[in-house]
Length: 154
Image (cartoon, rainbow, N blue to C red; front, top):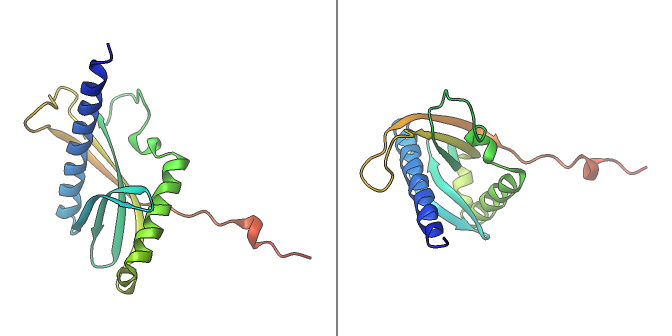
């Protein structure tokens, strides 16, 4: 039975790659230049690094094989970006920007989430997979202020 687990994982990875390809195509069609994919900094990964004239984007891509208007069996893809993942996204972005401070001279950093919906009937083992929808959530992840630290001591 364990011999099926790697195939399932590979299928998940393949679906993820299709989703990232679709997200890159969407970003490029909307005026972004792809700077990198699956980039690591400080032990954390960003699926896509992209830039336009005003922003440098660290994007997390969440992909589902279902119609975007179908009942949410697993919830919206963007809801899969947990607090832990948000923390990792912030950590990665800070580390990457520390190593590349020149980016901040011309662009504002932003952490986005991109949902990709692929056809549930598509065969992910090869060929192309029809993209049903791409939803982009700019500035979806922000650092929460630490109000406890900001309090004045009397």
